[in-house]
Image (cartoon, rainbow, N blue to C red; front, side, top):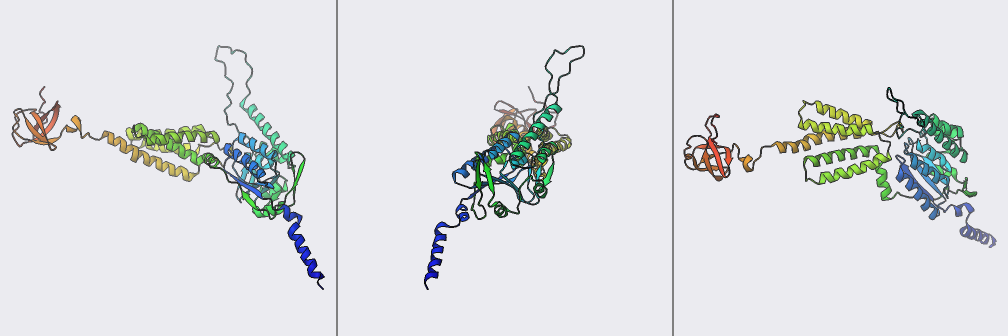
Length: 460
């Protein structure tokens, strides 16, 4: 009679102690990071550190939430190599809906063990662009023969070589991960862009998932091959997700790789330095301007910047400064605003990635702030310099007072509450008469009657 409870108790104890195989293995966490914005040096460092931390903490895989418009080739290459040689399985998930993995983000996605996308996301457009101008061959002057020299490659030849290199790299990565090699080449050569559903159909990715939980449920039980002929089975369905946050340094440097931040830094640098030059000794504006300039230089190194745009932004601010000093009836103001706006629009080289650009909201706000700053702050400083001097010899010019005694021609006067030794500039001035200062000889004022004619001359 007691056999049934005994059997049930033994089964319960067995399950409690041993558990099911999947439940035991599923305790290993899933490490997760978020890569958003341009691909730059801090992004590559963040990924490399996350792989090390995830491995050290015993995570079964690293999940990377990706949303990028592209970025620089150097960091992209380092990230691709890190993913291809990762010691633990890697999953790249292009999310949320509306996100994209453009340009460098395409090759990074292809490098992961598992590539996934959320609905309404896009991938592609990995065609390389020319970031460094290629000099054209010099033409010999008329009547002169150019010395023999090795032929220089043309711009088209160099771009073709760069495109072929990126295309072969994309094909090699796709082949290594067992994905669509032909499409990887088209993404580079033809800037082909596809949506998540088409990417799944063309076997560019393996999963389309609506969210992280859906993704982990779908990849549960998948076998992943790692370097060294190791095979790992994922148990992600109920695994805890632990996010590895970027360090303060990585966050700060990554924020600088934002075109909107770059425009703000350029404006702060220009305004701070100009204010310091107009008001020597203010110190704080000069310090802020110098720091902003240095940070802007880092941003320009991390972003595909158009230096024509940078020049137009600075030239626009110079025109606004000139308007305050040289009245032009608004011509310099209009030119400065147009130059500033055009420079802000052209600040990014959109051929690198069409989505890396300064937002119109930031352009409008910064334009208004620059105009107001010049007309109210710089303008006030310049007007202060032009204001009549109220102290010293210049401050006494045309000052008014009254004679404390007869000036024939020497005597004393009261000017702005002070007694002065004075000499009449012309004629005799009676006691109590209103006088006006017309000059100064040492500590003696030269005065005349306020009612005197303008033709009165100062004696030498």
